[in-house]
Amino acid sequence: MHELSLSYATVESVLESIANLDACRVVSLTLSAGELSGVSIEAFRFSFPIAAAGTILEDAELIINSEPVSVFCRECNQTSPLVSIQSFRCPLCGLPSGDIRSGEDFLIQSIEIETAEVTQDEHTHS
Amino acid sequence: MNTRIVELRKNILNKNDTLAHQLRSRFHAAGVTVFNWVSSPGTGKTELLKKTLIRLREMGFHSAALVGDLETDNDAVRLAESGVPARQIKTHTLCHLEADMVERHLEGWNLSDFDFLFIENIGNLVCPAAWDLGEDIRVVLLSATEGEDKPLKYPKLFHTADVVVLTKMDLAEPCEFNRHLAEQNVFAIRPGIPILATSAKRGIGLENLCTYLVSCRREEA
Ligand SMILES: Nc1nc2c(ncn2[C@@H]2O[C@H](COP(=O)(O)OP(=O)(O)OP(=O)(O)O)[C@@H](O)[C@H]2O)c(=O)[nH]1
Ligand SMILES: [Mg+2]
Ligand SMILES: [Zn+2]
Image (cartoon, rainbow over all chains, first blue to last red):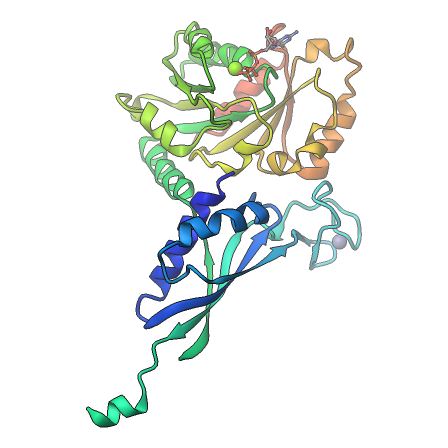
């Protein structure tokens, strides 16, 4: 539902991060979509090319990992993934827990960039 | 050509999130506490909000209200009957409120005149979940007439609630509404969250609700 504006934000954020890296092309983009982030992966894939058009992200491959929701259980002193987002309980002992440790964010994990090679030759000739 | 991997681990905030964060700071600075009321269409948001505005006024607090609907300004007219400034946000096609709409409709109000700002969202249990309006407290309402299992059907929204308000409790009996089951379902999604039972028509639970709202007031900045 707001995936297009997220796509623009993603493109902007990547461009900003690599401004000083001499990238000529982004080969791939690895994202992580938390199950509670409210982001539809399908809708994001659909809208991303619109936001990336005309930028060096234009042909980037999108790798989107869905991140399950995990909660911390005080009793077990451990963080574990929920069995279902309809039940915020520790999967180990069954106690209720709303202490979410992952699954809420939409993150850019990493990107693969192609850099314009400054060749040895150029250096030696100059 | 060389390729290399750059680790970023960057959270992506869309425009709405950025604006909502700015609004939140503005609300903080003005010392106004903001509530975003979300529910299905017809749960009784306007009815209960109107009664709440009247009661808070009697208690000596100053409030303002914004209300979103696709069309008509009926709800703003109803809310204004409480004697509190109320403005309608018409979204025409959009199924939720966004931070920039809230910002635009604040124009001309001096926020520091208010203790509370209430935002009645558009009746919808899906989209408002993902749209931060800069509120302090998200109030999710559930009526006795719409069944106990809404929290399980719409976990993403209920997960974002800070408090759940049961409405139309005067109709619980004829609708065979099982309050205990509804509460269990809320707790399955949001363990330990406060749940308040009300009936706007009968004035039940209004006092508790207002006590809760007042307890959410932040220290004046
Ligand atoms: N019996 C009973 N009816 C109520 C109560 N509160 C609201 N209603 C009725 O429920 C209907 C919907 O109430 P509204 O307050 O307009 O509901 P809403 O959630 O604001 O609706 P939208 O803004 O359209 O999403 C109206 O006919 C109200 O009179 C209540 O406590 N008890
Ligand atoms: Mg209404
Ligand atoms: Zn446990």
